[in-house]
Image (spheres, rainbow over the protein chains, first blue to last red):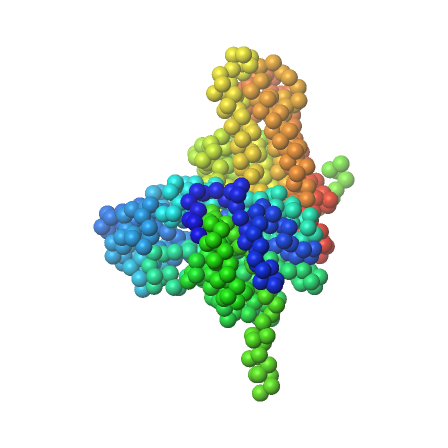
Length: 360
Length: 258
């Protein structure tokens, strides 16, 4: 695959690889996404706006330059903006690949970090020299103002020009709780939302605090995604119930939506309105109870995003899709092309253990 | 007619509604912040001058003050982010911040291009950018049965060609027409956009435009604010503007999403 290096959310030539219910692969312009929907389907997107979560400054005890990347928070409450977990790098910026970024100076509990107008205190160190829990000082208003004005979107070396907030702000963005953009949502403009309605399908949103996608450290990366809070409104829960009872499919825009809806349904298989914290990992062995199809970016094998796709289809189909993505020069990463994969009919192999348990 | 409603019901419509108001520290904007807060709305207001923002935030406890310049492209997303963070979303946006263009007012042929650009930046592009940045949140409010309204403050100068009001009048005409087109386009999303002329008011903007006017003949901004808020309340209650996704909602269900 080719790396998408220009920060364009909806390129005119963006492509969509569709894996249909029989495992056949179809290529289409991504703008025609709604053509693959049916009456009573519901498209669910993550409407979290993206925080400018990269904050530069210095480590007060040593005076050394640092870049702090806010990476997670336990709350979707705008008045609770003091506590975050964060990844800290030494000097440098996004132009250096995260794997090659120097470590920050040794961080200790109660160390102060001066980040432009913001002041943060290391509350805890978290078993890795780059990983800490931070607390911002000051009023809620001053912290939000400081993040809004001093922060920049988290960015990786494959995009060469500095990102502005509007580059990562999706058309459907609402409350600012994502640390990196829920980039599968880049597919949606208002014309597409209109097309979804015209197909007789519904459109709904959840808010999920998408965390960071890479820390530059293999060991830390294996722990991604971190726990992510989410919120599902009563209206969205209702639309999902209606789709299910009408035989429509639940189409998730992006992995964060899958994670939130499936977490919400862990108790009894139905999505409940309210707040939760998604803690689970989704992979080949995860039975999907709610989501029937996913529209996602193209992901390399080995990433947590790719693992999640394995819950939808078998590995042979995913390998065929990966070969096609390569052969047809699909673009990868957040500003790249997309895939649309429906869940194979519930796999008999997955129900067997339950049957065995019931028989026992 | 407003008098036909029992007072407590009329005043309840805005209770808990999340309202963002630009130009909220003087004239009509300040009166709107006071009026919406008095009716129980959760208010965030935007203005350029930090001292004034802080003063209004002290005067009206609970109102969230945000410092930002609507005329600057780079300021819009930080403003939107703070509005959404402090209110948790937004149901009503009132684009009130306005620029006269050249002061004292000038014939169009004597108007510097930069002064014209300034009027367009504040009166058209600023509202366009902020509305666009908040549209995801507004449409979500509509889907959740809360309603979603954008009120753009217009002027009779948007319709009538008053000599020396060229930059202001042309920019308000553009705002007015943008509002009408956007309102048509967003019908299915349940977002209403309305453009309202509040009339000639005794405000700092009017004093700048017409320094020697008889202020006793002008409308008080508090009166205009009350009228505008009632327009917003009517638009919020407009039942044919429920988003498609929320079309099966019944009033009983509204409580659990509020």
